[in-house]
Image 1 (cartoon, rainbow, N blue to C red):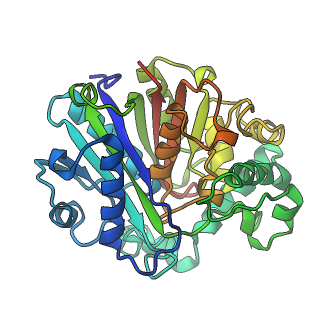
Image 2 (cartoon, helix red, strand yellow):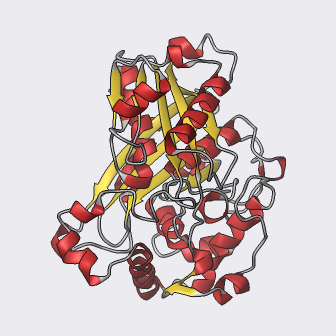
Length: 388
């Protein structure tokens, strides 16, 4: 069953703060839930489905449905790291298309700067089956992504300067975002001069760590038709889990190699038709490999692609992360999928910051990645349209 045109994003909201010492995790979830529902023109009494991931406190959806005062007959606690919220959107759209629900609320919240889970620590990694074979030997989050970067450099001649160009593009967009955590424009040289975190990744190749959160509301066509807000149709979705394959893993690609074609086929569009992309940018290498996997450039050519200014808004070949992304703007709960959808919705509504609004933006792609590029990861791709 195709979900094309069956579900619509009616509300999207990003918490404006990046440092929230005086808000609890449930309060942040509530802040963004109310914000997204108000954006849609709905209330908590309209919600019949709620979705959360590993960032939700207590018993996840069970605790949050009670805390938010929802009356739900459909809940989902799917956990795939940073891609969770796009997977939730896929599940919500599928349930709407099947006639099971009409209004789905999806929330994200985190406090890694002020006492919450540390980077990479929001999942129950200590109890994972792979933990005895990996964690005790020093595998870190930056280290895993650095392995992927080193291999891509070895295979294709990718350079640190090319990776730095991704950070430069993100900073050029963040300077226009008053809420961005990092608002200073940086140069390639400044990225390369920043401290080495895990060779070849420098500190400025890494995402920011922020408090905050975001939420979205996905509704049926019947509900969307009665709302005054411009609702964004979901054209296609795709998800895929990439495993280590007993050591046969290829570090130079992600699950986007599979999730992308599924989403494009359902949306009935090609990469050449995409006007704007929101790509999870936990590290610069995440963006570079994902661009290749989604078909925006040939394998091994993304370094040249980004170095030529393709990602710069508003007039680059493929403007990306116009809010500054996880590299500069916001990375709540160490998970970037939710904010990727929110900025894609802004672009399609023509509500992005004016300096980076893509002209005549009609089709956008949002992509989330969870886990580690060096081991096991989950990719989820969603294609949205300004209209059907």
